[in-house]
Length: 99
Image 1 (tube, rainbow, N blue to C red):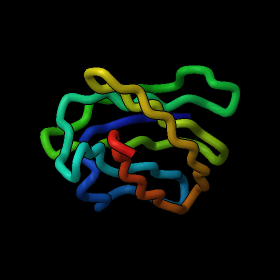
Image 2 (image 1 turned 180 degrees about the horizontal axis):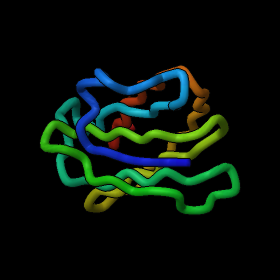
Image 3 (image 1 turned 60 degrees about the vertical axis):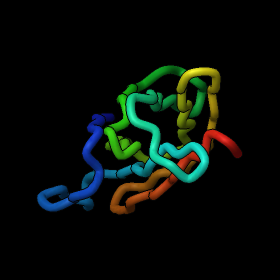
């Protein structure tokens, strides 16, 4: 089960007892990167979902328990970050394209 949205600021109305949330911002030099793409890959590397970042560089995925990879694509760069999600928790992960 996975869903995605590009508006991570507000979790009002989200039942965290049934959701694992992965969200954050994409940054370059400390500045938000809008219109980058963040892909959610499962533990085997298979594509699950993709969202564009908001103008503020924000992204959000609703995922299941487990190990995931976030692959961020922006002009001239591709960055992978591993993350572990669990039902009932919100993982905040900012992705710095310069790191």
